[in-house]
Length: 256
Image (cartoon, rainbow, N blue to C red):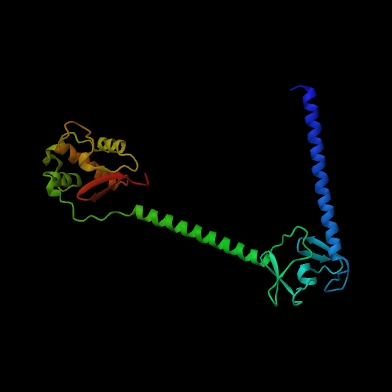
């Protein structure tokens, strides 16, 4: 862009900013003049001083005694019954006859009932706190439900798999290890545990009878070894065993 093209744009922007600033200043001076006219000749209800100023829309203060209030309520009356105005949300009405009252003291025509909005803010804050509390309670309830064990409908029958009871007895000292041939046959429990921890992912339920074998062949003996390793890992807190719909499932413990 050439210099000759940027100069008119710069001058135009400067002119716009000057005009906007002038409008803002004119509005400010007009508002101040309107407030002086609205309060002209009125006396403070407390000290009868005429030294009154407007603080903002719907709010005046006496410079001498510091008395502050709503000028519409303090100085204006109902044109129908001469009753005293009352502020309801953003409009004034007569306390006696209920007729609407148009304020003579509002430059922008915007006024708020502070008591009403304080009440609504308190109700909103209380509602948000209640919602956060309810959400926290729901989260705790969901976590509690997830952590509950599913009850076993019937006891696990160790007799369904021949040789399992003898193997368990051998491992816990109920029988001599030498009396159970497959236990003596190179059953490396630590290796099976590492195998299970490697194949069972978090949030992954596995059927115990369908676990990938650690050694070939994938026969009844291999499934027994995997089940034994699952029992020891559950005892150590790494796995959870659950029976659902006549199927024994295993999954990672949430803590691990």
